[in-house]
Image (cartoon, rainbow over all chains, first blue to last red; front, side):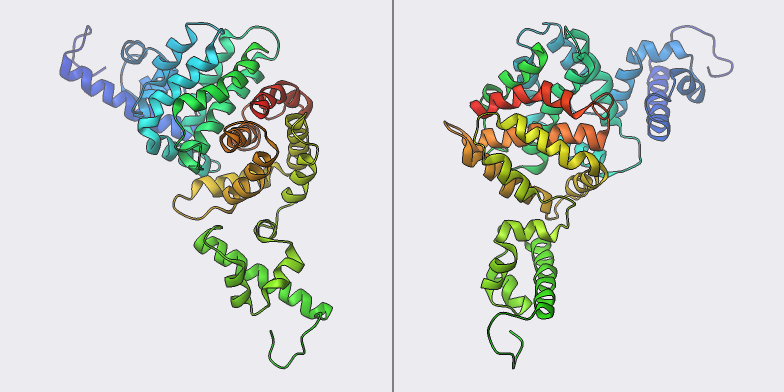
Amino acid sequence: MTAGRPRGRPSRADGEDRRAAILTVARRQFAAKGYRATSLRAIATEAGVDVSLIGHYFGGKSPLLVATMQLPIDPVEKISSVLAGGPDGLAERLLTTFLDAWDPHRDVFSSLIRTTLGSEGEQAPLLDVAREVLVAGVAGVLDGQDRELRAELVASQLIGMATMRYVARLEPIADATAESVVRLLAPAMQHVIDG
Amino acid sequence: MTAGRPRGRPSRADGEDRRAAILTVARRQFAAKGYRATSLRAIATEAGVDVSLIGHYFGGKSPLLVATMQLPIDPVEKISSVLAGGPDGLAERLLTTFLDAWDPHRDVFSSLIRTTLGSEGEQAPLLDVAREVLVAGVAGVLDGQDRELRAELVASQLIGMATMRYVARLEPIADATAESVVRLLAPAMQHVIDG
């Protein structure tokens, strides 16, 4: 807290400053220590705010991570709404939502993948999002055995497809309609979801 | 041809020199122009050999590309033997053979993926191998419609799985047994193969 200011709801200008300060500190700590080793408390301390303010602004640690990445879409919100429908038809909803969200931003996705996979040894925020948002979310709605492994195989099919389409840009997958990709891949992905 | 040498089968020492010269030139031309824009004739001319000698030593353009990469396994040979069995059970053979070949060399695979995806704008030999050996090979044994697109989706499932296992190294997929990966992923991949 800023010395000398009374406690209570911050004014709008203060709020924006604090939100920005939290993001700056979070981005640096996630990059330096990785997602798991970074605590909201350490971020709050360095940013000079109460830890409850991070929950107030961002809703938790994984949405905070996503916010630091300044993505053109909000994967937490997208995946939450896709998962809300449960495992039935999940592959089709996941693929349709993913392609609808990322097809217009394929260069951003490509740059994210290149940065993530091109930098050995460094912390990779995209991997943390894949694990904490996509894999954890999918694992949470699966039934049966090997839920974590199956959720990772679902994620690997999504990321593999996106890598061929957006990063490697092989034809015909780079320019195939989203509908044809969904039609051909969704039944296979659903197979892993059904287990 | 070296000036003054009679035509005919080269001596062993000459053969090794020429093989090495072809590889050096091919590696440089593939890197500079990419696989498709590079001709065996241009490689032969720069290496100072008859173009038929490339066929004699390497068997063709895509095996020449693979030879320039100095991989710990020969993907052309592996994929050929997997494809020889036709589309029935292809996913299981492909995954088993792939994991058997690359699990002991996961660091090499990781480095190949990082180099390929980390270097925007440059030619990427691994992508050429994926397209010319894996995708073209799988497309050649598929029946029905969208064979190229389905072959690319099969390749994307294989590469996505390998990226999670060898490059991102997420648990539990990084240390899952090959058998469990095959058991969970092969039926999904076979679904794309069957169309």
